[in-house]
Length: 65
Image (cartoon, rainbow, N blue to C red; front, side, top):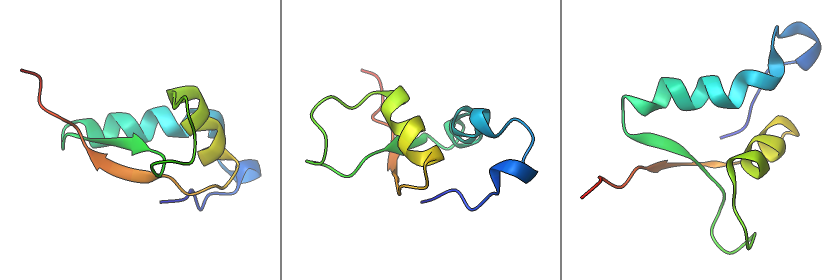
């Protein structure tokens, strides 16, 4: 998935990744990067790439045991 919003026309553009995660949480889905592209994957890295127009993937959250 990529963001198709214009930063100049989108209020609070920087909060889009958090708002996307919140909307997907009820469906047990979150944001991630394609495997093997980065060693240390953090939410900050995913957010930065997503806001820069890079694609991220949606993944199913693993249930807690």
